[in-house]
Image (cartoon, rainbow, N blue to C red; front, side, top):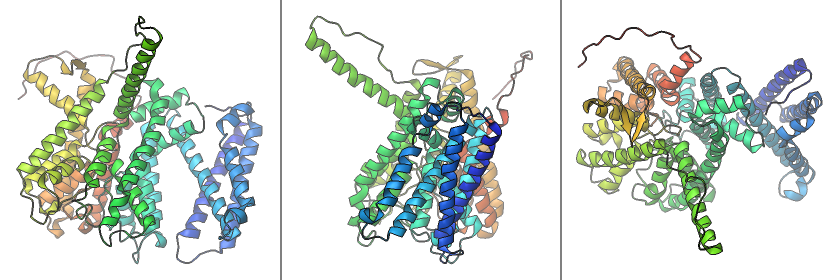
Length: 595
């Protein structure tokens, strides 16, 4: 929703002032909660927050007076009113609502929550506006990821975020990048080296990185009742790779609701599992945090675990296979596929009830109406490719592996779990370093393939693989067109799939060679280096155990690879070729010999 202001110069000044105020708010929180000893008096910092609160209120009041349509302004910013009412109500009734807590503490905490909410709202709105500004939206996404990583690294370096004597810049950047890119490779033990604050920062980075902060901004706009403008919808269409412009708003709302429901369900179902292993997790608060952490990590295909050995100790527990595996699969299918399946299911249910109502009202009436919602080609390809890869991966891992007797889970369960998690989730129930070379190669292939488009997964994607395989099939059978499920795939999509695969292969080989040079002093085997590269590029997180021992240069290479793997070669290619004009001429065709 576009709001027009009377004085544009004042509007620019208001934006700059708001940005400065937001930075000051974040700085006060870092100074209050990030250090063992306060660098500035607490009273002074709280006074600054009160001043920031007044600045935010003044900004809204002046912008309200500066707009042409005050109704449109109130409709777009309606959330500000209930937020302010709740804030005033809690401040006024602090002693009655929280009799056991100091009223001053309640007021300061409430003020802090209000300010952080304001900052988040403003960041999300700014991100969406930037994505819809007419410039390349993918550049906005890349810049957003970089800002998120740098901010996360800074927070992880704070003394109150970790249990170490100090956290190096490279290790903080590595952890923040791995979390934001939902990779799962670690140089520090998530459960031991980071405390609750640090783990919360990591979890926040996983959630924002998994779904994309730009999508979060659009979701927030929908939650606030703002209909997306045409330019905003086009931006979201580009970022979500969605074909139908009119479905963008519904899809983004579906992403938000589905994510909350799936992650909440996963957390509830996992809750009882952590108390069954003596000494692992103590108390209900730790159980809930552990459940929420692993549910979000699984659905976002992040692979971060609060346990040093991932899920090896829990490999014999049923929830690992009945809860974690479905979370990984659902996160890797893609929101477009989930949305289409939900549409089909809803349409079928409606038609069943509608048909029954027709029968009850008039037995001679015929059921008629719009054509039923069908499963799209994208959905068919994703489901077929995912099922094929899971089954084939499981059988291959069983065939080429002799699992050690100390493995607590049956061979079939262990192979099934690794086949699922290798396509970007990154959890493990067996020791990866102890696996055979053949199975490490199988895992590398699965990691590079990854999940499906518009999902939390990485890799070249299942649809890309399907298109390339069917293109080869069409060539071998002397067919001019690439066909899948009785539908023809356009040559542009085939070219795009081949480009993505080639870029991934080139980056994989170059990164492996560079790591082989930087890690000479460590004496790592080439196979382990290539496994680490595939894991970073596919944003998986599986490792043979060499990650913490990488040199500084090696860690920096892996950081870059994780970023490339998350943003995707096609996204980077789109950044460089956005708004390019097609050639208005064709050269003469001349045959050449290949093969």
